[in-house]
Length: 437
Ligand SMILES: NC(=O)C1=CN([C@@H]2O[C@H](COP(=O)(O)OP(=O)(O)OC[C@H]3O[C@@H](n4cnc5c(N)ncnc54)[C@H](OP(=O)(O)O)[C@@H]3O)[C@@H](O)[C@H]2O)C=CC1
Ligand SMILES: N[C@@H](CC=O)C(=O)O
Ligand code: NA
Image (tube, rainbow, N blue to C red; front, side):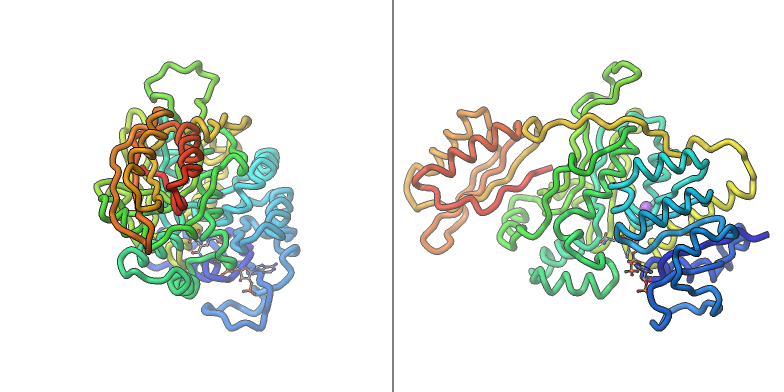
């Protein structure tokens, strides 16, 4: 008998998934075991890119998650509600879940995984991070014997697409965002993409898998790309960098440190526009592509790269999760597979942002007076902030423009120096402060 799917949502990802499942030739034979039993949508009147029997397309989503015939619920609605309640109801009814919804998982993961473990079902989420890139399964399985030191990702296709076009074409932010929406990369409300919130959801999920504990979303430091200007993109270029929105989860502890077995090291989890040296593998990830650069012991460095959004790519991840569940159902193992189930109990310990150690880039507009560079240098020097380069590159009207790149510094020391610099009479403004990888 076929495994019955109840798919919630037939938008970009739902449509891509149905198309893939309906076109099984040349793909894994287990796909033949799947029946698209019900698909829930908001409106029956919309024209659809896929053909489904009339009885399959419905608007009563509760009926799908309560239907005893449904084996697997595939949630590709997006948003928090009704997605969360439908997932919980489906779990309570003993159904396995496949979801692409990072927003729900990063906020309600504890509630969802606790009830899934209680009900003996799996919650699969490969599509939630990195779109088509396999990254959840590698962290849960192939890399799980490593002690992870850092996960650094370009995990939002929309912002990477925008930054790439701003850099390569000097395009305007709003025009490029409209293109990303038209191409189906951006969320229904693109604020989550642009403000870094989508990337924050994703790095919370990756950090949780890499560092083996739960993450509170409010512990993820988050800055979006709205303040990234063409001027900074051009300065970064001259200094040998490109600007990317990076999502970073990192421990300061050496992977070879002998930690007590029970303890997980404190980590920082953050999302911010970052100057990436052009020589770093992440610098060459352009357009809607995503990449996740992982450092661990003993493996060293691994980078997973591919399309981070879009119908087909995301459908690939959703369908592979479905296939994993079909395989599980077909082999009928009574015990939960520990490599598929969530086993987190505790929350990760988070390093306060003032204690972070990173490099910074800052741009100052100053009065055109002699000695200004020296005064800026003194403020940094007094706080032990060592500078890698200081350049006065030009003028904006009457004001001189000075750009500084630091060595690795404690963020708290850097911020204190900036406050003092800001109060100097020769300083007009500090239009941008960005971190450097
Ligand atoms: N787009 C992408 O590239 C990627 C998206 N994701 C995630 O996948 C999920 C789905 O995204 P996407 O496909 O882009 O979203 P869309 O907005 O394209 O599609 C949403 C679908 O859900 C249906 N829907 C939404 N709310 C309701 C409701 N209350 N009742 C009934 N039906 C509802 C809509 O119905 P109707 O068609 O009738 O309007 C639509 O079919 C999101 O969690 C997103 O973050 C993850 C990776 C990549
Ligand atoms: N809006 C997201 C879609 C995938 O998660 C993105 O742009 O990456
Ligand atoms: Na993925």
